[in-house]
Image 1 (tube, rainbow, N blue to C red):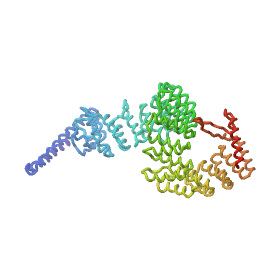
Image 2 (cartoon, helix red, strand yellow; image 1 turned 30 degrees about the vertical axis):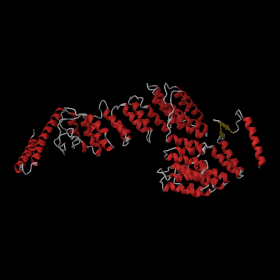
Image 3 (cartoon, rainbow, N blue to C red; image 1 turned 60 degrees about the vertical axis):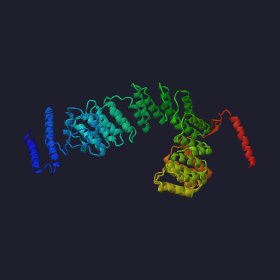
Image 4 (cartoon, helix red, strand yellow; image 1 turned 45 degrees about the vertical axis):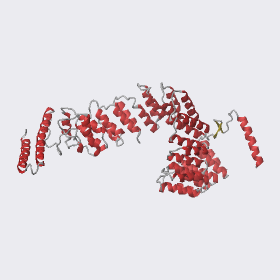
Length: 618
């Protein structure tokens, strides 16, 4: 022992002897326990100092006598493992690394249990006793209960001091990167910094960073992290490619995704079901349905996710018939359709206006699936958009648990079918139940007012949405207000409304007002609107067509000739008009100027008879 240690011991012992002389056991019995406890603490302190010095000698490091800051000295056991003291990180790490006997899992969990109660790791460091624990195991346990980046950085400091950051196995680094990348309190930039300052991190750590960035606002960082991973000669695995395709999907990077697809084909994971499903979703989201179908056809095995990705991809890109065809193929396979499949099919039926297909899907739900609020909402939306409002209303009344989307779908369905009073009445009923409206609800109300010319009521609902419910209007709400003014012929009010918008109007809003100017023959405002529209979308043929029709209605043929000349010089082609009619479960499509329909002659004869009868009635 050193002289200062002996002085500490003897001064403590002399103090205890003085207290013993001055204290009577009969008058103050508790003082004996305090004296014995102090003596025990002094002896324990000398034992720990000796243990630290011997450990330091073995590692050729002599710890400073000023380094430990001891706030509370208590023996650690299963009953009081929640008591902690503050130690210097080097002493803390060295004391645990030279453990003589391991603790059990119960002790480790108690040592780490105090983390969630506070925000400082230093306040919860365990006391070192004769039952030490592995520093690596302790750091991993602390990371499991870490609840903030502040705590994580404190744990990281201990990991760096103890030399675990460059551990051969890399478990601690992987857990640090995982928490920074995937936890709710994580910091993706810090996880990237950890990898950049570490020699040869494992592929699993790179996967965590790639996964974290793929769903963030900067998915390009996933691609950059993957590029650096390859430069460091780290091989990707089956968990790398799905999130790379997710990042390419968010970026709409078709060429980048194709290059990653080529790299996937050269690996052992080319037939991995998760990677292939992600690849199908990527191609379908980018509109490359031929490539998605090729991947699907070459799959050795398919899951319901594979089928859903193809069906949803076809329907989202407007290939409704192909989507329905894939559903028919799916029924003949051994894969059962789930809720996602049914919602996609109902969306296709609503967009096609094919109520027969919707009824077929409805029967499938009744036989194979359990009705819930999501399926019920999709059915209400489908029947309403197909014009079967009565069926939609009956189904709406049968749904026991309605959420805001169910109410909004019914209100919007009534609005698009010009049932304004029913839509407004349903909104008043909605306010009586504990379901608050959302942006779709007010979109339905604005559409209802627009179809009936209720300008005053529409403005009131628009203000109600912002002021009472705190819902910020989106571009579609502004477009609905412009349509409301335009249908009633209040074109000056519509133009001023656009000019006073807090956001920059898009092409849809200007095109809505230009169509209203064409209907009401207002060339004065129409010229201003046409100029604004052609500046935003100079390559859209439909904008020139609307402007040409407006001038033609006003008899300004020179302006019509100028617009058509501009269309020819720009090599614009007018989109062919088309209409669809559903008859006995079959959707018939008619294109403008197309006589390829097998019943074209009979249809033209019937149209001639109808036209003659109309003339006679007039």
